[in-house]
Image (tube, helix red, strand yellow):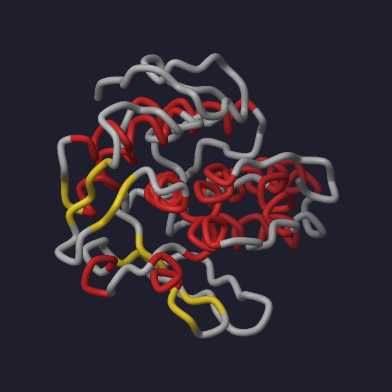
Amino acid sequence: MTSQGTQLTVEQVGYLTAGPGRAAETALARLLDAGLVRVSREGLVSAVHLSNCGAITPLEARTLSRARTGARFDQVVRSTAFSTEMKALHQDLLDRRLLQRPRHRNPAWGFSLTLAIALFLLGFVAAEFFLAVPIALLFALWQRGRRAVTRQGRQALLHVSATDRVHNVAVYGFCGKVNRRPVADEFGLPQSVVKMLPLKKHRKRQSSSDGGGSGCSSCGSGCGTSSCSSGSSCSSGSGCSSGSSCGGGCGGGGGD
Protein backbone atom coordinates (compact mmCIF):
# COMPACT_ATOMS: atom_id res chain seq x y z
CA MET A 1 0.00 0.00 0.00
CA THR A 2 1.27 3.50 -0.74
CA SER A 3 1.18 6.55 1.48
CA GLN A 4 -1.55 7.86 -0.82
CA GLY A 5 -3.72 4.91 0.17
CA THR A 6 -3.56 3.24 -3.26
CA GLN A 7 -3.29 -0.52 -2.84
CA LEU A 8 -1.33 -2.38 -5.48
CA THR A 9 -0.84 -6.11 -5.74
CA VAL A 10 2.63 -7.27 -6.65
CA GLU A 11 1.37 -8.21 -10.13
CA GLN A 12 -0.06 -4.72 -10.59
CA VAL A 13 3.29 -3.25 -9.57
CA GLY A 14 4.95 -5.39 -12.23
CA TYR A 15 2.46 -4.34 -14.89
CA LEU A 16 2.70 -0.62 -14.15
CA THR A 17 6.49 -0.85 -14.05
CA ALA A 18 7.13 -2.67 -17.33
CA GLY A 19 3.94 -4.04 -18.85
CA PRO A 20 2.28 -7.46 -19.12
CA GLY A 21 5.54 -9.37 -19.53
CA ARG A 22 6.74 -8.12 -16.15
CA ALA A 23 3.42 -9.00 -14.51
CA ALA A 24 3.80 -12.52 -15.93
CA GLU A 25 7.33 -12.75 -14.55
CA THR A 26 5.98 -11.68 -11.17
CA ALA A 27 3.33 -14.42 -11.15
CA LEU A 28 6.01 -17.00 -11.94
CA ALA A 29 8.26 -15.56 -9.22
CA ARG A 30 5.53 -15.99 -6.60
CA LEU A 31 5.03 -19.62 -7.64
CA LEU A 32 8.78 -20.23 -7.39
CA ASP A 33 8.85 -18.51 -4.01
CA ALA A 34 6.04 -20.77 -2.77
CA GLY A 35 7.72 -23.91 -4.11
CA LEU A 36 4.83 -24.63 -6.48
CA VAL A 37 7.01 -24.82 -9.59
CA ARG A 38 10.63 -25.67 -10.26
CA VAL A 39 12.99 -24.66 -13.05
CA SER A 40 15.66 -26.99 -14.38
CA ARG A 41 19.10 -25.75 -15.37
CA GLU A 42 18.00 -26.15 -18.97
CA GLY A 43 15.15 -23.70 -18.37
CA LEU A 44 12.24 -26.16 -18.26
CA VAL A 45 9.49 -25.03 -15.88
CA SER A 46 7.41 -27.79 -14.29
CA ALA A 47 4.69 -27.79 -11.65
CA VAL A 48 5.32 -29.64 -8.40
CA HIS A 49 1.68 -30.77 -8.18
CA LEU A 50 -0.87 -31.77 -10.81
CA SER A 51 -3.45 -29.21 -9.66
CA ASN A 52 -3.62 -25.44 -9.26
CA CYS A 53 -3.47 -25.77 -5.50
CA GLY A 54 -1.59 -22.84 -4.03
CA ALA A 55 -2.28 -20.33 -6.82
CA ILE A 56 -3.80 -17.21 -5.27
CA THR A 57 -4.42 -15.07 -8.37
CA PRO A 58 -5.74 -15.76 -11.87
CA LEU A 59 -2.30 -15.07 -13.34
CA GLU A 60 -0.71 -17.59 -11.03
CA ALA A 61 -3.37 -20.18 -11.89
CA ARG A 62 -2.72 -19.59 -15.58
CA THR A 63 1.04 -19.90 -15.12
CA LEU A 64 0.69 -23.02 -13.01
CA SER A 65 -1.58 -24.64 -15.60
CA ARG A 66 1.00 -23.99 -18.31
CA ALA A 67 3.77 -25.43 -16.15
CA ARG A 68 1.87 -28.67 -15.51
CA THR A 69 2.77 -29.94 -18.95
CA GLY A 70 6.32 -28.60 -18.74
CA ALA A 71 7.47 -25.67 -20.87
CA ARG A 72 10.46 -23.45 -21.44
CA PHE A 73 10.94 -20.52 -19.06
CA ASP A 74 10.25 -17.88 -21.71
CA GLN A 75 7.25 -19.76 -23.12
CA VAL A 76 5.59 -19.91 -19.71
CA VAL A 77 6.01 -16.16 -19.22
CA ARG A 78 4.86 -15.35 -22.74
CA SER A 79 1.76 -17.55 -22.42
CA THR A 80 0.71 -15.68 -19.27
CA ALA A 81 1.55 -12.28 -20.76
CA PHE A 82 -0.90 -12.80 -23.63
CA SER A 83 -3.61 -14.56 -21.64
CA THR A 84 -7.20 -13.55 -20.97
CA GLU A 85 -6.26 -13.27 -17.30
CA MET A 86 -3.72 -10.59 -18.23
CA LYS A 87 -6.38 -8.73 -20.20
CA ALA A 88 -8.50 -8.73 -17.06
CA LEU A 89 -5.64 -7.19 -15.06
CA HIS A 90 -5.23 -4.52 -17.71
CA GLN A 91 -8.92 -3.68 -17.54
CA ASP A 92 -8.77 -3.52 -13.75
CA LEU A 93 -5.92 -0.99 -13.93
CA LEU A 94 -7.89 1.02 -16.49
CA ASP A 95 -10.95 1.01 -14.23
CA ARG A 96 -8.83 2.26 -11.32
CA ARG A 97 -7.39 4.99 -13.58
CA LEU A 98 -3.87 3.77 -13.04
CA LEU A 99 -3.60 3.06 -16.77
CA GLN A 100 -5.06 4.82 -19.78
CA ARG A 101 -5.19 4.21 -23.51
CA PRO A 102 -1.87 5.58 -24.79
CA ARG A 103 -1.43 7.78 -27.82
CA HIS A 104 1.74 7.71 -29.87
CA ARG A 105 3.47 11.04 -30.31
CA ASN A 106 3.05 12.58 -33.75
CA PRO A 107 6.38 13.93 -35.05
CA ALA A 108 4.53 17.04 -36.21
CA TRP A 109 3.48 18.06 -32.69
CA GLY A 110 6.42 20.47 -32.41
CA PHE A 111 5.31 22.24 -35.58
CA SER A 112 1.80 22.65 -34.14
CA LEU A 113 3.24 24.15 -30.97
CA THR A 114 5.37 26.54 -33.01
CA LEU A 115 2.30 27.52 -34.99
CA ALA A 116 0.41 28.28 -31.77
CA ILE A 117 3.24 30.54 -30.61
CA ALA A 118 3.34 32.27 -33.98
CA LEU A 119 -0.41 32.87 -33.88
CA PHE A 120 -0.09 34.30 -30.38
CA LEU A 121 2.57 36.76 -31.53
CA LEU A 122 0.54 37.70 -34.60
CA GLY A 123 -2.36 38.43 -32.27
CA PHE A 124 -0.59 41.61 -31.18
CA VAL A 125 -0.78 42.75 -34.79
CA ALA A 126 -4.31 41.53 -35.55
CA ALA A 127 -6.43 40.48 -32.56
CA GLU A 128 -8.36 37.84 -34.55
CA PHE A 129 -5.25 35.63 -34.55
CA PHE A 130 -5.71 35.18 -30.80
CA LEU A 131 -8.87 33.18 -31.51
CA ALA A 132 -6.86 30.47 -33.28
CA VAL A 133 -4.28 30.07 -30.49
CA PRO A 134 -6.37 27.73 -28.21
CA ILE A 135 -7.23 25.49 -31.18
CA ALA A 136 -3.57 25.22 -32.20
CA LEU A 137 -2.50 24.51 -28.61
CA LEU A 138 -5.10 21.79 -28.13
CA PHE A 139 -4.06 20.20 -31.44
CA ALA A 140 -0.40 20.27 -30.37
CA LEU A 141 -1.24 18.65 -27.03
CA TRP A 142 -3.20 15.92 -28.79
CA GLN A 143 -0.34 15.22 -31.17
CA ARG A 144 2.13 15.11 -28.29
CA GLY A 145 0.53 11.83 -27.19
CA ARG A 146 0.32 10.41 -23.70
CA ARG A 147 1.80 7.61 -21.63
CA ALA A 148 -0.02 4.43 -20.77
CA VAL A 149 0.59 4.87 -17.03
CA THR A 150 -1.42 7.77 -15.64
CA ARG A 151 -0.17 10.36 -13.18
CA GLN A 152 -2.05 8.49 -10.45
CA GLY A 153 -0.34 5.26 -11.49
CA ARG A 154 3.10 6.86 -11.48
CA GLN A 155 2.40 8.39 -8.09
CA ALA A 156 1.42 4.99 -6.71
CA LEU A 157 4.65 3.44 -7.99
CA LEU A 158 6.73 6.13 -6.27
CA HIS A 159 5.69 4.69 -2.92
CA VAL A 160 6.41 1.07 -3.81
CA SER A 161 9.55 -0.54 -2.45
CA ALA A 162 10.97 -3.96 -3.19
CA THR A 163 10.63 -5.69 0.18
CA ASP A 164 11.22 -9.30 -0.86
CA ARG A 165 12.42 -11.32 -3.81
CA VAL A 166 8.99 -11.45 -5.46
CA HIS A 167 8.71 -7.65 -5.29
CA ASN A 168 12.24 -7.46 -6.68
CA VAL A 169 11.02 -9.28 -9.79
CA ALA A 170 8.01 -6.94 -10.06
CA VAL A 171 10.22 -3.86 -9.89
CA TYR A 172 13.40 -4.99 -11.64
CA GLY A 173 12.53 -8.23 -13.48
CA PHE A 174 14.40 -11.52 -13.42
CA CYS A 175 17.16 -9.88 -15.49
CA GLY A 176 17.50 -6.90 -13.16
CA LYS A 177 19.85 -6.30 -10.26
CA VAL A 178 19.37 -5.17 -6.67
CA ASN A 179 22.41 -3.92 -4.81
CA ARG A 180 24.50 -5.17 -7.76
CA ARG A 181 23.21 -8.69 -7.23
CA PRO A 182 21.17 -10.30 -10.02
CA VAL A 183 17.56 -10.85 -9.01
CA ALA A 184 17.73 -14.29 -10.63
CA ASP A 185 20.33 -15.34 -8.03
CA GLU A 186 17.71 -14.96 -5.31
CA PHE A 187 15.78 -17.79 -6.97
CA GLY A 188 18.82 -19.88 -7.83
CA LEU A 189 18.22 -19.31 -11.55
CA PRO A 190 21.26 -19.31 -13.85
CA GLN A 191 21.65 -16.38 -16.25
CA SER A 192 21.35 -18.77 -19.18
CA VAL A 193 17.73 -19.36 -18.14
CA VAL A 194 16.59 -15.79 -17.50
CA LYS A 195 18.28 -14.61 -20.68
CA MET A 196 15.74 -16.67 -22.59
CA LEU A 197 13.47 -13.67 -22.00
CA PRO A 198 13.84 -10.89 -24.59
CA LEU A 199 15.52 -7.81 -23.20
CA LYS A 200 13.16 -4.88 -22.88
CA LYS A 201 14.17 -1.31 -22.16
CA HIS A 202 12.04 0.60 -19.71
CA ARG A 203 12.13 3.44 -17.26
CA LYS A 204 15.19 3.02 -15.06
CA ARG A 205 14.54 2.58 -11.38
CA GLN A 206 17.16 2.46 -8.68
CA SER A 207 17.18 0.16 -5.68
CA SER A 208 18.03 1.43 -2.20
CA SER A 209 21.73 1.17 -2.99
CA ASP A 210 22.55 0.33 -6.56
CA GLY A 211 20.33 -1.56 -8.93
CA GLY A 212 17.60 -1.22 -11.48
CA GLY A 213 18.50 -0.79 -15.11
CA SER A 214 17.17 -2.90 -17.90
CA GLY A 215 14.94 -5.88 -17.29
CA CYS A 216 13.47 -8.78 -19.16
CA SER A 217 10.00 -9.03 -20.55
CA SER A 218 8.47 -11.52 -22.93
CA CYS A 219 5.77 -9.08 -23.98
CA GLY A 220 7.49 -6.30 -25.80
CA SER A 221 4.30 -4.35 -26.42
CA GLY A 222 4.51 -2.71 -23.00
CA CYS A 223 1.91 -1.17 -20.73
CA GLY A 224 -0.33 0.19 -23.40
CA THR A 225 -1.37 -3.06 -24.96
CA SER A 226 -4.67 -4.83 -24.67
CA SER A 227 -2.98 -7.69 -22.87
CA CYS A 228 -3.39 -6.96 -19.20
CA SER A 229 -5.08 -8.56 -15.79
CA SER A 230 -6.88 -8.36 -12.45
CA GLY A 231 -5.25 -10.46 -9.82
CA SER A 232 -7.88 -9.99 -7.21
CA SER A 233 -9.53 -13.38 -7.38
CA CYS A 234 -8.70 -16.99 -8.20
CA SER A 235 -9.56 -18.17 -11.66
CA SER A 236 -12.03 -20.90 -12.37
CA GLY A 237 -10.76 -24.35 -11.58
CA SER A 238 -8.48 -23.28 -8.76
CA GLY A 239 -11.07 -24.20 -6.18
CA CYS A 240 -10.98 -20.79 -4.49
CA SER A 241 -13.55 -18.08 -4.13
CA SER A 242 -12.86 -14.47 -5.05
CA GLY A 243 -10.65 -12.31 -2.91
CA SER A 244 -7.21 -10.82 -3.01
CA SER A 245 -5.65 -13.67 -1.05
CA CYS A 246 -7.51 -16.93 -1.31
CA GLY A 247 -5.16 -19.17 0.57
CA GLY A 248 -4.13 -22.78 0.46
CA GLY A 249 -6.37 -25.82 0.38
CA CYS A 250 -7.34 -25.21 -3.21
CA GLY A 251 -9.03 -28.00 -5.02
CA GLY A 252 -8.80 -29.28 -8.56
CA GLY A 253 -6.67 -27.86 -11.33
CA GLY A 254 -7.80 -25.36 -13.88
CA GLY A 255 -7.11 -25.73 -17.53
CA ASP A 256 -5.37 -23.36 -19.88
